[in-house]
Amino acid sequence: MSKSLHVRLDDASSAALDIVRAGALSDSEAVRIALREAAARRTARSTIQAEVAALAADESDREEMRIIREQLAELAPGD
Image (tube, rainbow, N blue to C red; front, top):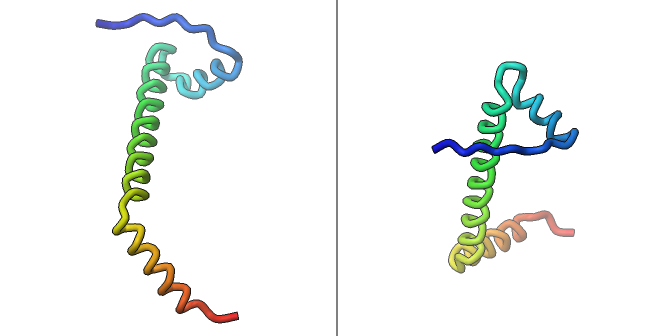
């Protein structure tokens, strides 16, 4: 079932709609595309945040990073 939505656009949103429309799309098509793109970005961002949290909680990975930092510090020229 289709859902109808009525919105009032401010100047910035109206300008953004013009960019998305690119002269070839209807307002409805442009809004549908923009909503799908925004949802995809938010989904990707949430996925990345979850991966970062999982890596930060991984003790063995953190220990490996600590060892690598120590090894790199040993290779760095002394002062």
